[in-house]
Image 1: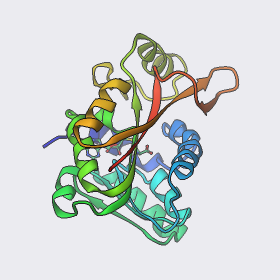
Image 2: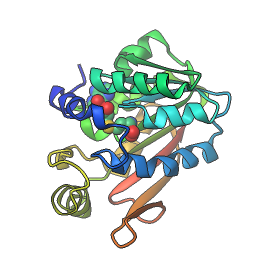
Image 3: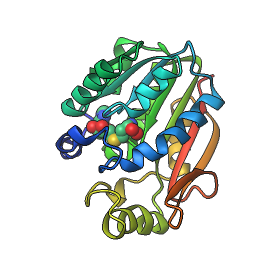
Image 4: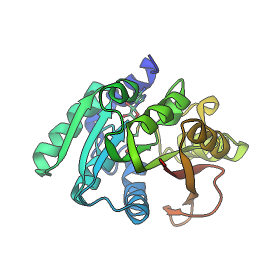
Amino acid sequence: MNVDPKELSKFSDLAHRWWDPTSEFKPLHEINPLRLDWIDSHARLRGRDVLDVGCGGGLLAESMALRGATVKGIDLAQKPLMVAELHRQESGVGGLSYEEISAEALAVREPARYDRVTCMEMLEHVPDPASIVAACAALAAPGAHLFFSTISRTPKAYVFAILGAEYILKLLPRGTHDYEKFVTPAELAGFCRAAGLQVADIIGMQYNLLSKQYRLGGPTDVNYLLHAVKP
Ligand code: SAH
């Protein structure tokens, strides 16, 4: 199967802190409004069927459901999914469900089922990211919009995303990211095209060391997001 058990236990061990905005998941909390608005402005969420692949504790999935979409979140790590489900019950958000299943297996069960497919900060944690992109493409209905985000494999990404974030600023636990698994925008665009998708937009995401804030735009050589369409 296309999964690294060490990656799943990394996220499971920290799962109880997922919704704490001061925890190891602080960066995800901070980028969530940015990516949510970016997705919603490219393709309206309200009334749509959305699949969130590698949903973890449900930050993005729940926020998309709050925008009026019907959202299903999938992941292969049990504890983050339990945390996501508990948070859903507490917040009482409707139209939101979770399941422990791989993208590849769900693609066999529900081909061409979703209007929107999101897969954020996940591709850099799997052995075969192209297989995840292909599964996302298979899950998407004709005319659907897909959104991916990950980290590029450049010297700057090594300095910022690993040395800076894990060792100097300690925004993330050491070992969160593995340089070899980073995916360049050209590689991700290639995976999309090979899966029959059209790449519509790629945008960078920057972290300002002084203001300690993220923003969208600028170079795509560290964090970036990609929007694709299924013809
Ligand atoms: N997408 C969420 C969580 C990102 S953390 C967000 O951006 O807020 C990465 C997530 O990918 C973790 O929850 C981890 O369990 C999950 N993951 C890692 N490998 C996976 C795989 N092969 N299939 C599904 N999920 C996976």
